Amino acid sequence: MAEDNKIPVQWRALSRSTGTDTDSFAYANDGCPSVLISMPLRYMHTTVEMIHKDDIESTIKLMYETLLELTPKTNLSYL
Image 1 (tube, rainbow, N blue to C red):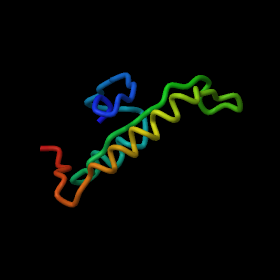
Image 2: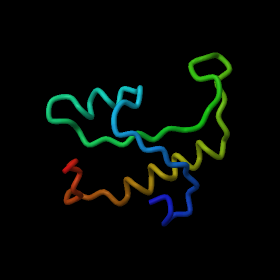
Image 3: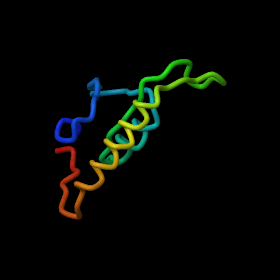
Image 4: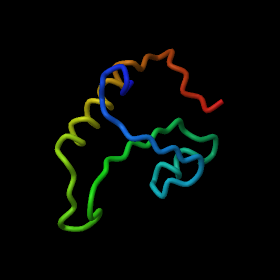
């Protein structure tokens, strides 16, 4: 999706723990199809947390374009 829409991304694949809440619902019971989209930022969880405006806009565009492609027939299974 990012490539088709010329949205800049940095890939980091994690097959186990991401350290986020995504792990909880991705692996609980039968699991839930999950994708974690993170934005690069500085000083997370502080009063001076910073993120570049372009990264926010690119993330929104990536999420929007992805949602446009989903249909009731989209296969979201892990296997």
